[in-house]
Image (tube, rainbow, N blue to C red; front, top):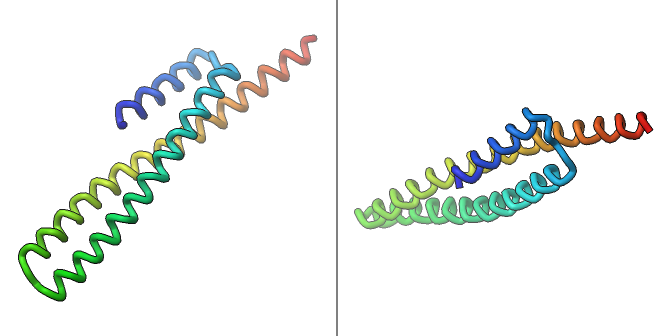
Length: 119
């Protein structure tokens, strides 16, 4: 997923640098944003689920105070940390893509306005 996010971001930034922004590129970028919004939602749900499992395993550990309960808690804690890291990456990348989308919209509007004025 990280490679995919970086690849798309690099592609869009290169197109912006080349001043090659079209309606089609904007539509493609919006589709990628929609895909990542869906991905982000799924990961948020899973993140919350593992947070509840972590809390439950912590309560279990404090009640029975056993090594298996401690190991279960550590497993859920480890998974939760990785999910938080991944969700953080998704969230920040989508926020960056929103800013890129806004820049692209402004460019497309300016080009459209210049085309209309010249006619």
